[in-house]
Length: 358
Image 1 (cartoon, rainbow, N blue to C red):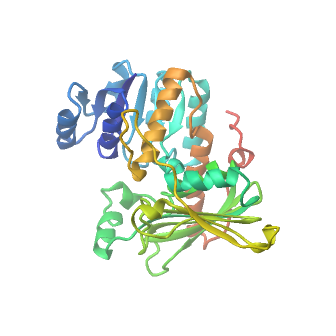
Image 2 (cartoon, rainbow, N blue to C red):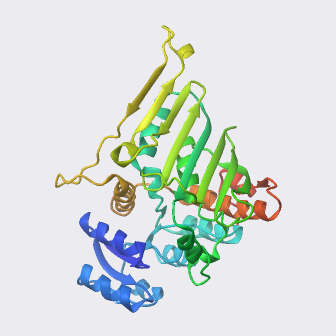
Image 3 (tube, helix red, strand yellow):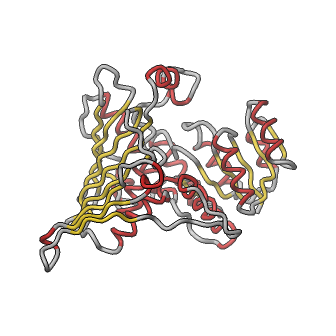
Protein backbone atom coordinates (compact mmCIF):
# COMPACT_ATOMS: atom_id res chain seq x y z
CA UNK A 1 0.00 0.00 0.00
CA UNK A 2 1.70 3.18 -1.25
CA UNK A 3 1.02 6.24 0.90
CA UNK A 4 1.87 9.92 0.49
CA UNK A 5 1.79 12.53 3.25
CA UNK A 6 1.14 16.26 2.91
CA UNK A 7 2.27 18.45 5.81
CA UNK A 8 5.14 17.29 7.99
CA UNK A 9 4.17 18.59 11.40
CA UNK A 10 1.51 16.15 12.56
CA UNK A 11 2.01 14.44 9.22
CA UNK A 12 5.47 13.20 10.14
CA UNK A 13 4.04 11.55 13.25
CA UNK A 14 1.35 9.90 11.12
CA UNK A 15 3.92 8.84 8.53
CA UNK A 16 6.10 7.10 11.10
CA UNK A 17 3.04 5.23 12.38
CA UNK A 18 2.15 4.25 8.81
CA UNK A 19 5.53 2.60 8.47
CA UNK A 20 5.27 0.92 11.88
CA UNK A 21 1.97 -0.57 10.75
CA UNK A 22 3.47 -1.94 7.54
CA UNK A 23 2.42 0.70 5.00
CA UNK A 24 4.90 2.02 2.44
CA UNK A 25 5.33 5.80 2.74
CA UNK A 26 6.67 6.61 -0.71
CA UNK A 27 6.38 10.43 -0.84
CA UNK A 28 6.06 13.38 1.51
CA UNK A 29 5.37 17.07 0.97
CA UNK A 30 6.08 20.24 2.92
CA UNK A 31 7.14 23.75 1.96
CA UNK A 32 9.55 23.93 4.90
CA UNK A 33 13.00 22.59 3.88
CA UNK A 34 13.83 21.82 7.51
CA UNK A 35 10.82 19.55 7.85
CA UNK A 36 11.64 17.86 4.57
CA UNK A 37 15.18 17.22 5.80
CA UNK A 38 13.83 15.68 9.02
CA UNK A 39 11.50 13.49 6.98
CA UNK A 40 14.37 12.24 4.82
CA UNK A 41 16.13 11.02 7.98
CA UNK A 42 13.05 9.34 9.47
CA UNK A 43 11.61 8.04 6.20
CA UNK A 44 14.54 6.93 4.05
CA UNK A 45 13.60 6.23 0.48
CA UNK A 46 10.53 8.46 0.41
CA UNK A 47 10.44 11.13 -2.28
CA UNK A 48 10.35 14.66 -0.87
CA UNK A 49 8.59 17.53 -2.64
CA UNK A 50 7.62 21.08 -1.72
CA UNK A 51 4.26 21.34 -3.55
CA UNK A 52 1.45 18.82 -3.15
CA UNK A 53 0.41 18.47 -6.85
CA UNK A 54 3.67 16.59 -7.40
CA UNK A 55 2.24 13.74 -5.32
CA UNK A 56 -0.39 13.12 -7.99
CA UNK A 57 2.40 11.61 -10.11
CA UNK A 58 3.53 9.14 -7.42
CA UNK A 59 1.04 6.28 -8.13
CA UNK A 60 -0.34 6.53 -4.61
CA UNK A 61 -2.99 4.25 -3.16
CA UNK A 62 -3.73 6.73 -0.36
CA UNK A 63 -2.73 10.15 0.87
CA UNK A 64 -2.67 11.49 4.43
CA UNK A 65 -3.50 15.20 4.55
CA UNK A 66 -1.95 16.94 7.53
CA UNK A 67 -1.41 20.38 6.04
CA UNK A 68 -2.80 23.52 7.68
CA UNK A 69 -6.13 23.05 9.47
CA UNK A 70 -8.20 25.16 7.10
CA UNK A 71 -6.71 24.09 3.75
CA UNK A 72 -7.83 20.48 3.29
CA UNK A 73 -10.81 20.58 0.94
CA UNK A 74 -9.02 21.49 -2.34
CA UNK A 75 -6.50 18.70 -1.78
CA UNK A 76 -9.17 16.19 -0.79
CA UNK A 77 -11.12 16.92 -3.98
CA UNK A 78 -8.04 16.70 -6.19
CA UNK A 79 -6.86 13.37 -4.79
CA UNK A 80 -10.35 11.85 -4.81
CA UNK A 81 -10.74 12.87 -8.45
CA UNK A 82 -7.41 11.13 -9.12
CA UNK A 83 -8.72 7.91 -7.52
CA UNK A 84 -6.52 8.22 -4.43
CA UNK A 85 -8.00 7.32 -1.03
CA UNK A 86 -7.90 10.31 1.34
CA UNK A 87 -7.32 10.46 5.09
CA UNK A 88 -7.85 14.09 6.17
CA UNK A 89 -6.63 15.34 9.55
CA UNK A 90 -8.32 18.41 11.16
CA UNK A 91 -11.24 20.28 9.57
CA UNK A 92 -12.97 18.67 6.60
CA UNK A 93 -14.18 22.04 5.29
CA UNK A 94 -14.38 25.70 6.28
CA UNK A 95 -17.78 26.61 4.80
CA UNK A 96 -20.88 25.14 3.18
CA UNK A 97 -19.51 25.59 -0.35
CA UNK A 98 -16.46 23.50 0.48
CA UNK A 99 -18.67 20.93 2.21
CA UNK A 100 -20.75 20.47 -0.94
CA UNK A 101 -17.63 20.23 -3.12
CA UNK A 102 -16.08 17.58 -0.88
CA UNK A 103 -19.23 15.47 -0.70
CA UNK A 104 -19.67 15.68 -4.48
CA UNK A 105 -16.06 14.58 -5.04
CA UNK A 106 -16.44 11.69 -2.63
CA UNK A 107 -19.61 10.50 -4.38
CA UNK A 108 -18.10 10.50 -7.87
CA UNK A 109 -14.77 8.93 -6.85
CA UNK A 110 -13.92 5.25 -6.79
CA UNK A 111 -11.71 6.07 -3.79
CA UNK A 112 -12.86 6.82 -0.24
CA UNK A 113 -12.65 9.82 2.07
CA UNK A 114 -11.87 9.15 5.72
CA UNK A 115 -11.71 11.73 8.50
CA UNK A 116 -8.62 11.25 10.66
CA UNK A 117 -10.59 11.93 13.84
CA UNK A 118 -8.48 10.01 16.34
CA UNK A 119 -10.50 11.31 19.30
CA UNK A 120 -13.40 9.07 18.27
CA UNK A 121 -11.12 6.13 19.01
CA UNK A 122 -9.38 7.23 22.20
CA UNK A 123 -9.70 4.57 24.93
CA UNK A 124 -12.04 6.50 27.25
CA UNK A 125 -14.37 7.50 24.41
CA UNK A 126 -14.44 3.93 23.10
CA UNK A 127 -15.24 2.61 26.57
CA UNK A 128 -18.13 5.06 27.00
CA UNK A 129 -19.39 4.02 23.58
CA UNK A 130 -19.29 0.34 24.56
CA UNK A 131 -21.28 1.10 27.73
CA UNK A 132 -23.88 3.07 25.79
CA UNK A 133 -24.24 0.42 23.08
CA UNK A 134 -24.77 -2.23 25.77
CA UNK A 135 -27.74 -0.20 27.03
CA UNK A 136 -26.29 0.19 30.50
CA UNK A 137 -27.26 3.85 30.95
CA UNK A 138 -30.40 3.90 28.84
CA UNK A 139 -31.04 6.38 26.06
CA UNK A 140 -28.38 9.11 25.98
CA UNK A 141 -29.81 12.60 26.47
CA UNK A 142 -26.82 14.80 27.35
CA UNK A 143 -23.22 14.55 26.22
CA UNK A 144 -20.39 16.79 27.38
CA UNK A 145 -17.01 16.84 25.69
CA UNK A 146 -13.89 18.91 26.39
CA UNK A 147 -10.84 19.58 24.27
CA UNK A 148 -8.78 21.90 26.44
CA UNK A 149 -5.19 23.09 26.76
CA UNK A 150 -3.95 24.46 30.08
CA UNK A 151 -1.27 26.75 28.65
CA UNK A 152 0.34 29.85 30.13
CA UNK A 153 -1.22 33.16 28.99
CA UNK A 154 1.90 34.24 27.08
CA UNK A 155 2.00 30.93 25.20
CA UNK A 156 -1.69 31.20 24.29
CA UNK A 157 -1.25 34.77 23.07
CA UNK A 158 1.75 33.75 20.99
CA UNK A 159 -0.23 30.98 19.33
CA UNK A 160 -3.67 32.41 18.61
CA UNK A 161 -2.29 35.93 18.29
CA UNK A 162 0.06 34.97 15.46
CA UNK A 163 -1.68 35.56 12.09
CA UNK A 164 1.04 33.52 10.37
CA UNK A 165 -0.07 30.40 12.26
CA UNK A 166 -3.32 28.65 11.38
CA UNK A 167 -4.40 28.80 15.03
CA UNK A 168 -4.17 32.57 14.75
CA UNK A 169 -6.42 32.87 11.72
CA UNK A 170 -9.23 30.38 12.44
CA UNK A 171 -12.40 31.24 14.34
CA UNK A 172 -12.41 30.33 18.06
CA UNK A 173 -15.17 27.78 17.38
CA UNK A 174 -13.47 26.16 14.39
CA UNK A 175 -11.42 23.52 16.19
CA UNK A 176 -14.46 21.62 17.46
CA UNK A 177 -14.01 18.35 15.60
CA UNK A 178 -12.25 16.66 18.53
CA UNK A 179 -15.40 17.18 20.59
CA UNK A 180 -18.16 16.91 17.99
CA UNK A 181 -16.92 13.86 16.11
CA UNK A 182 -17.02 11.60 19.21
CA UNK A 183 -20.51 12.93 19.98
CA UNK A 184 -21.79 12.08 16.48
CA UNK A 185 -20.09 8.68 16.51
CA UNK A 186 -21.59 7.79 19.90
CA UNK A 187 -25.14 8.81 19.02
CA UNK A 188 -25.31 8.28 15.26
CA UNK A 189 -27.14 11.63 15.28
CA UNK A 190 -26.70 14.78 13.22
CA UNK A 191 -26.44 18.33 14.60
CA UNK A 192 -29.39 20.59 13.87
CA UNK A 193 -28.39 23.91 15.49
CA UNK A 194 -25.66 25.43 17.61
CA UNK A 195 -25.31 28.35 20.00
CA UNK A 196 -21.78 29.43 20.96
CA UNK A 197 -20.65 31.46 23.96
CA UNK A 198 -17.27 32.96 24.82
CA UNK A 199 -16.06 31.74 28.20
CA UNK A 200 -14.45 35.08 29.03
CA UNK A 201 -16.12 38.10 27.44
CA UNK A 202 -12.94 40.09 28.06
CA UNK A 203 -10.91 37.58 26.02
CA UNK A 204 -13.42 35.88 23.69
CA UNK A 205 -10.94 34.11 21.40
CA UNK A 206 -9.36 32.04 24.16
CA UNK A 207 -12.11 29.51 24.91
CA UNK A 208 -15.69 28.83 23.89
CA UNK A 209 -18.63 26.71 24.97
CA UNK A 210 -21.04 25.41 22.35
CA UNK A 211 -24.52 24.02 22.92
CA UNK A 212 -25.48 21.72 20.06
CA UNK A 213 -28.94 20.26 19.50
CA UNK A 214 -28.98 16.79 17.91
CA UNK A 215 -31.63 15.34 15.64
CA UNK A 216 -32.32 12.46 18.06
CA UNK A 217 -33.56 14.98 20.63
CA UNK A 218 -30.37 14.93 22.67
CA UNK A 219 -28.05 17.80 23.56
CA UNK A 220 -24.29 18.18 23.46
CA UNK A 221 -22.27 20.74 25.43
CA UNK A 222 -18.71 21.13 24.21
CA UNK A 223 -15.84 23.15 25.63
CA UNK A 224 -12.67 23.81 23.70
CA UNK A 225 -9.77 26.18 23.61
CA UNK A 226 -7.40 27.29 26.33
CA UNK A 227 -8.66 26.77 29.88
CA UNK A 228 -6.81 25.65 32.99
CA UNK A 229 -7.47 22.14 34.19
CA UNK A 230 -6.18 20.31 31.11
CA UNK A 231 -7.36 16.65 31.09
CA UNK A 232 -4.58 14.06 31.25
CA UNK A 233 -6.39 11.93 28.66
CA UNK A 234 -4.72 13.78 25.77
CA UNK A 235 -6.63 17.05 26.40
CA UNK A 236 -9.95 15.22 26.22
CA UNK A 237 -12.78 14.59 28.70
CA UNK A 238 -16.02 12.88 27.74
CA UNK A 239 -19.33 12.27 29.49
CA UNK A 240 -22.66 10.68 28.53
CA UNK A 241 -25.79 10.95 30.67
CA UNK A 242 -28.57 8.55 29.86
CA UNK A 243 -32.09 7.97 31.10
CA UNK A 244 -30.76 5.34 33.54
CA UNK A 245 -27.26 6.42 34.46
CA UNK A 246 -23.96 8.14 33.70
CA UNK A 247 -20.70 7.15 32.01
CA UNK A 248 -17.88 9.69 32.13
CA UNK A 249 -14.12 10.01 31.97
CA UNK A 250 -12.40 9.90 35.34
CA UNK A 251 -10.90 13.28 36.18
CA UNK A 252 -7.61 11.88 37.39
CA UNK A 253 -3.92 11.95 36.55
CA UNK A 254 -1.85 9.43 34.64
CA UNK A 255 -3.34 6.12 33.51
CA UNK A 256 -6.55 6.60 35.49
CA UNK A 257 -7.46 9.53 33.23
CA UNK A 258 -8.37 6.97 30.56
CA UNK A 259 -10.77 5.11 32.86
CA UNK A 260 -14.52 5.63 32.95
CA UNK A 261 -16.86 6.03 35.91
CA UNK A 262 -20.26 4.35 35.55
CA UNK A 263 -23.09 5.29 37.91
CA UNK A 264 -26.53 3.73 38.07
CA UNK A 265 -29.04 5.24 40.49
CA UNK A 266 -30.81 3.14 43.14
CA UNK A 267 -34.17 3.28 41.39
CA UNK A 268 -32.75 1.29 38.45
CA UNK A 269 -31.76 -1.64 40.70
CA UNK A 270 -34.30 -4.21 41.98
CA UNK A 271 -32.53 -4.19 45.33
CA UNK A 272 -32.46 -0.41 45.54
CA UNK A 273 -28.67 -0.19 45.43
CA UNK A 274 -26.60 2.53 43.84
CA UNK A 275 -23.96 1.15 41.48
CA UNK A 276 -20.91 3.37 41.15
CA UNK A 277 -17.77 1.84 39.69
CA UNK A 278 -14.66 2.65 37.74
CA UNK A 279 -13.63 0.69 34.65
CA UNK A 280 -10.34 0.57 32.78
CA UNK A 281 -10.25 0.31 28.99
CA UNK A 282 -8.69 -2.79 27.48
CA UNK A 283 -5.16 -2.11 26.20
CA UNK A 284 -4.33 -2.21 22.49
CA UNK A 285 -1.36 -4.25 21.28
CA UNK A 286 0.51 -4.28 17.97
CA UNK A 287 1.00 -7.63 16.20
CA UNK A 288 4.52 -7.85 17.67
CA UNK A 289 3.10 -7.64 21.21
CA UNK A 290 4.06 -4.00 21.85
CA UNK A 291 1.43 -2.12 23.82
CA UNK A 292 0.20 1.06 22.16
CA UNK A 293 0.25 4.16 24.38
CA UNK A 294 -3.34 5.21 25.15
CA UNK A 295 -2.89 8.59 23.49
CA UNK A 296 -1.74 6.85 20.27
CA UNK A 297 -4.57 4.32 20.11
CA UNK A 298 -6.83 6.61 18.09
CA UNK A 299 -4.08 7.21 15.54
CA UNK A 300 -3.40 3.49 15.16
CA UNK A 301 -7.08 2.70 14.69
CA UNK A 302 -7.69 5.37 12.05
CA UNK A 303 -4.62 4.31 10.07
CA UNK A 304 -5.70 0.68 10.24
CA UNK A 305 -9.12 1.86 9.07
CA UNK A 306 -7.53 3.57 6.08
CA UNK A 307 -5.68 0.40 5.16
CA UNK A 308 -8.95 -1.56 5.39
CA UNK A 309 -10.54 0.90 2.95
CA UNK A 310 -7.74 0.48 0.44
CA UNK A 311 -6.97 -3.22 0.75
CA UNK A 312 -10.30 -4.73 1.80
CA UNK A 313 -12.84 -2.29 0.37
CA UNK A 314 -14.30 -1.54 3.78
CA UNK A 315 -16.19 1.71 4.46
CA UNK A 316 -14.37 4.56 6.23
CA UNK A 317 -14.42 4.60 10.03
CA UNK A 318 -15.42 8.29 9.97
CA UNK A 319 -16.81 9.05 6.49
CA UNK A 320 -17.34 12.32 4.70
CA UNK A 321 -20.83 13.29 5.87
CA UNK A 322 -20.20 13.20 9.65
CA UNK A 323 -16.80 14.82 9.01
CA UNK A 324 -18.51 17.69 7.20
CA UNK A 325 -21.21 17.90 9.88
CA UNK A 326 -18.67 18.22 12.71
CA UNK A 327 -16.70 20.85 10.81
CA UNK A 328 -19.81 22.90 9.93
CA UNK A 329 -20.79 23.05 13.61
CA UNK A 330 -17.68 25.20 14.05
CA UNK A 331 -18.71 27.38 11.11
CA UNK A 332 -22.24 27.86 12.51
CA UNK A 333 -20.75 28.42 15.97
CA UNK A 334 -18.60 31.26 14.65
CA UNK A 335 -21.69 32.93 13.24
CA UNK A 336 -23.46 32.45 16.57
CA UNK A 337 -20.61 34.21 18.37
CA UNK A 338 -20.82 37.13 15.96
CA UNK A 339 -24.60 37.35 16.49
CA UNK A 340 -24.64 37.49 20.28
CA UNK A 341 -24.83 33.69 20.76
CA UNK A 342 -28.03 33.32 18.73
CA UNK A 343 -28.78 29.67 17.84
CA UNK A 344 -27.77 29.02 14.22
CA UNK A 345 -29.29 26.15 12.21
CA UNK A 346 -27.05 23.76 10.33
CA UNK A 347 -27.53 23.43 6.54
CA UNK A 348 -30.47 21.28 5.50
CA UNK A 349 -28.35 18.46 4.10
CA UNK A 350 -26.57 18.10 7.45
CA UNK A 351 -29.84 18.10 9.40
CA UNK A 352 -31.27 15.46 7.06
CA UNK A 353 -28.08 13.42 7.21
CA UNK A 354 -28.13 13.21 3.43
CA UNK A 355 -25.83 14.17 0.58
CA UNK A 356 -26.81 17.52 -0.99
CA UNK A 357 -28.26 17.58 -4.46
CA UNK A 358 -25.60 18.97 -6.78
